[in-house]
Picture 1: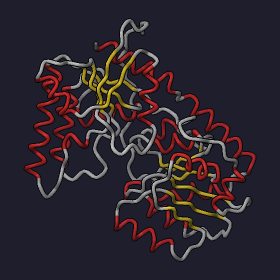
Picture 2 (picture 1 turned 90 degrees about the vertical axis):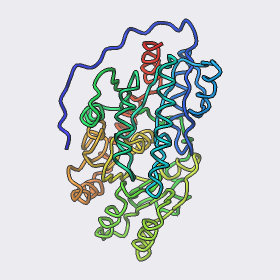
Picture 3 (picture 1 turned 135 degrees about the vertical axis):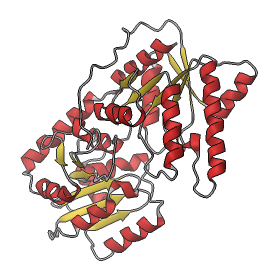
Picture 4 (picture 1 turned 180 degrees about the vertical axis):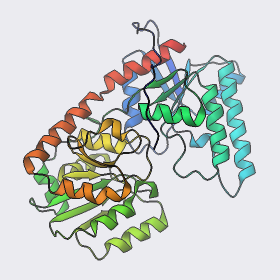
Length: 372
């Protein structure tokens, strides 16, 4: 595990009132499967920041006709920039070099390049040498790097050697980003869950790194007939999907909803559950944890990545130090007295409120303002 040390953070200049609009270009995010991006861009709008989503190649075409149309180019998820495919490495390499050339052009034309690092390496990295090389070069090209925690800052420095103008801007909450009007009783009735049952929830896109197999193995060891596990989210991994269905077919306590959960339906699952379980095998930042906290639900998470900086064990949920301790954490949750659970729900929501988008928008604006 990466050892944390505290260094003096890079100091930003004091914020000034917007004198003119800052124009930001950013690649479209496809598919837009959570509201992080819309919350982010809304948060900077009040500081005089105008955002346009546009493909990198389209910006290059504009520059060829001497049309610089913005001040900042802000990258988030960058997988499309290197488009790796194991069966066509040469084409992938050519595409990666072309995109690097485009980014060099933007830099030479005075664009401030900003990169928000959501992962130091993609979860399904198929060509690690190309990807790490691209990320290393990008870390040198960018004027400013944004990470979401002290852990992320140090892991990024360790992997890519960049420490200058690396800013910590946390992941924001989802309070108000999704509907939240349904009551606990209504949500449970909608899902066919009795009021007295204890409900564990795993919500979101289902991928191997999220530890779903381990969760299922642990849950099968729980004999209490009044404990329910809900797994809700889209799974695009055929092998993993088959494993989940096979593991759950003999246990009626497991409720599967293996499809994309619409924004208006997230409240049903969050308000019906008692605990949100996120047994990541590897993680840097977790929007899923912020989503749970935003609905006032405590979480069960490993002490990995930035989670140990956010979640206080016994206050906002339970954190377990090793993968094999997931069962211990779940048992702690299931034996938590109702009064303590209610207190943890209140504390979870209070924690989510601290990660408000107004503060985050101000931080992002200050980064833009410094570079233009």
